[in-house]
Amino acid sequence: MPGARYPIEIVNGVPVVAAPAEIDISNADCLDAVLREAAARGHARFVVDLTGTQFCASSGIGVLVRAHKRAVAEGGELRLVMPNSAAVLRVFAITGIDQVIPHFPSLYEAVVPAPATAPRPPRRRRRPKPGLRADRPPPDSGATTSPA
Image: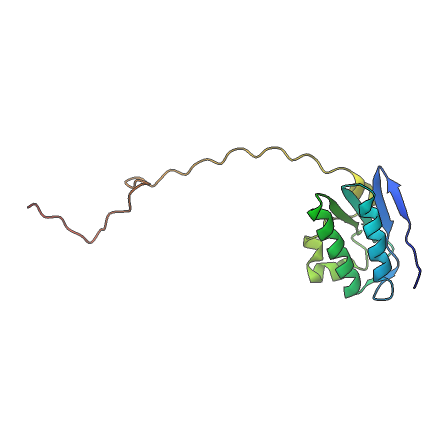
């Protein structure tokens, strides 16, 4: 597919790229160029919609992983839209990409801002076991003391 273009649509202020039906070596470079353009539009987050994607070769996975790494390095995020029925979901699960790149079952969920994370409560300090002090090693149970 030389010269193929994938439009960048803005949804709720987030750039969304609709991925092609098949991502392979013939169009991976073009997809990479479009993802770079989407990221360059000054948005911290952008989305790749894989709803219509039936096949994704390793070249396509590589493009998505590199786009994800670039986004994270620049303080942003790449999100994927992959419904549970998506044909490519199995490939992403086998390769572990589904654990690396955030993915959502719908475009609506992918463009909604992530909730602000609440500050974590301070961790409670663990108390030493009775009879042991944190600043001393445990007594040697085999040693005997004799009065001198």
